[in-house]
Length: 44
Image 1 (cartoon, helix red, strand yellow):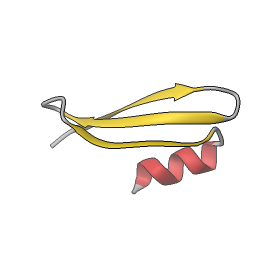
Image 2 (image 1 turned 90 degrees about the vertical axis):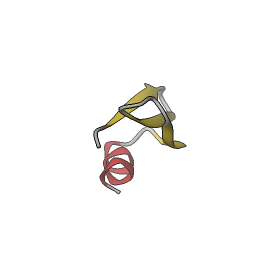
Image 3 (image 1 turned 180 degrees about the horizontal axis):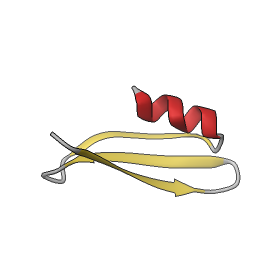
Image 4 (image 1 turned 60 degrees about the vertical axis):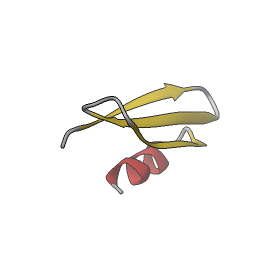
């Protein structure tokens, strides 16, 4: 089943919301706006 991620990026934090193809929220989190942190979260 496909998943889609939306990122709301600011200087210090990034809010991430992952939804499935039916639009159901599968995960939400706020973390540091650092490429390593975002990639690690999305790769889980």
